[in-house]
Each structure stands twice: as structure tokens, then as C-alpha cells.
Image 1 (cartoon, rainbow, N blue to C red):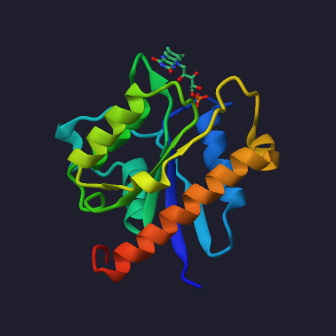
Image 2: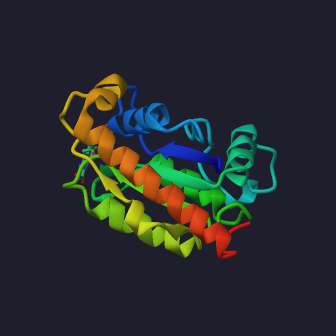
Length: 183
Ligand SMILES: Cc1cc2nc3c(=O)[nH]c(=O)nc-3n(C[C@H](O)[C@H](O)[C@H](O)COP(=O)(O)O)c2cc1C
């Protein structure tokens, strides 16, 4: 069976973040041929183009893992109708890198009422020449649910939605690879 390495980034720095919990739950729910690594964007400095040539360990690590990944999964909260600052900061650091163009992206929205950040995120990612896989989009009502990682895994409806989205995402990555759209 074909193996997939996926990087997952949460736009929330909160300890009890629903977005981070959704990604960690997906890591546990993924079948053995799909490896999901939840990355860390908290240690990135504030984006400054003057520093792009500097050796920034947190950025180097992020780029290395992203470069070795078959796809990127993003789950981000909406703040004041926008994408979270930490996620936008991470994306700004990645804008001029070679890792992003044609990268397949799966978006997870943990608060279905939050439509502005999702729309903005799609625009940003498309501008960065990533390949947002719309069919793999997952919307799950975690906000105010009090569910943690274990609770999400145990919730049959929510875990099935995450697993279905992941399966579609990997099918699309496989199809893109076979059509030569990915290396
Ligand atoms: C300062 C602030 C602004 C927010 N603005 C919005 C908003 O504009 N739209 C929305 O749907 N939710 C908004 N929220 C709710 C967050 O998106 C929600 O708490 C989310 O679960 C946070 O994600 P996390 O659990 O992964 O940390 C806001 C929350 C905070 C703290």
C-alpha cells in the first residue's frame, strides 16, 4: 500500500485548542500507511523579509518537514473574521520557499460558523500556488463541545468525518502523483 507523509499545522497556540486536538485525533485515527506529524509554529519569530536569509532553526525544521511531506493539513481558528496571526505568520515565512507550490492542502474547520477565515485561507493558499483539495474539506462542530483528543477519537460521527476527509485527501494526492502533478 502506498505510504503518505503529511504535515499538520494548527493555527491556535492555545493549550486546549480544538484545532490542535482535531489534528492530534486525526494522527491517532490515521491508518498505518498514513503518517501525520503535527508541526510547531509557535517558535517562529514574527515575519520579517529582512531575515529570510538568516538561519532560523524553527523555520528550517518547518521547511524540512514540509519539503518531505506529500501534503499539508491545516486547522485554524477564526479571530475577528480573519486567519489566526500565528498561522498567517507561518505562511508568510513559507511564501518564497520552494516547498509550497503545488502542495496539496486539506482544510479542517472546527467551527462551521467561522466562514471568513476559511475563505481568506483559501485565497492566501491559492496565491501561494498551493493546491487546496476542496473535496477533502472537513467541517466539524468542535467549538464549545468540550471534546479533547480522546473525546474526538471516541465520537463516531466526528472521527468518521475526519477519516473520510483524510481518505479523500490521500486519494487525490495519489491521483495528482500519477498524473505527474506532483513529484
Ligand atoms: C479574540 C477572539 C476573536 C474571535 N473572533 C471570532 C470570529 O470572528 N469568528 C468566529 O467564528 N469565532 C471567533 N472567535 C472564536 C474562536 O475562533 C474559537 O474560540 C476557536 O475555538 C479557537 O480555536 P482553538 O480552540 O483551536 O484555540 C474568536 C475568539 C477570540 C479569543
